[in-house]
Amino acid sequence: EKAVRYYSKSLRLAPAGPNSHVYFSNRAAALCYLERYEEAELDAERSLALNPEYGKAHARLGLSRYFLRDYYGAVEAYESALEYDPNNAASRSYLAKAKSKISRRHSGSSAVYVE
Image 1 (cartoon, rainbow, N blue to C red):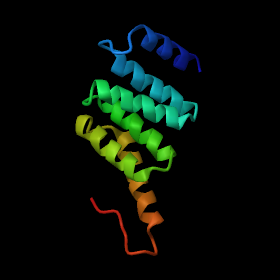
Image 2 (cartoon, helix red, strand yellow):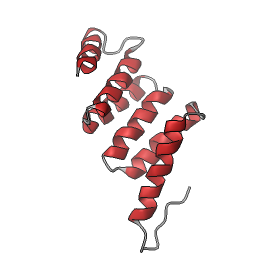
Image 3 (cartoon, rainbow, N blue to C red):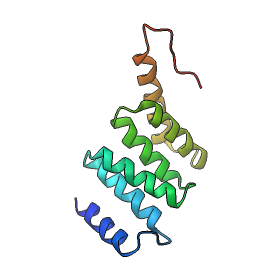
């Protein structure tokens, strides 16, 4: 909760400053830790609006969407994250988990997740 307050204060001072994309992304991580996934998703999106190539923001967007059960959105975000940070083990792991959730959701039907 303290981290969320500090990042919020920094963002009030400079909502579009040179490091604001990092603050939004870090606040998204803190919000995920607090299980406030809707807010985390918004902050990750705000970070990406400021810097679309910030890989950590893509990963945090993926995490928030995963826990919001938006598995297709999580796959999209993690695939983007891995474009910028291909060796990120957590992104690879959650990408596989999201794809597995999609496949399980559609088991019994003809729909299967295909890359």
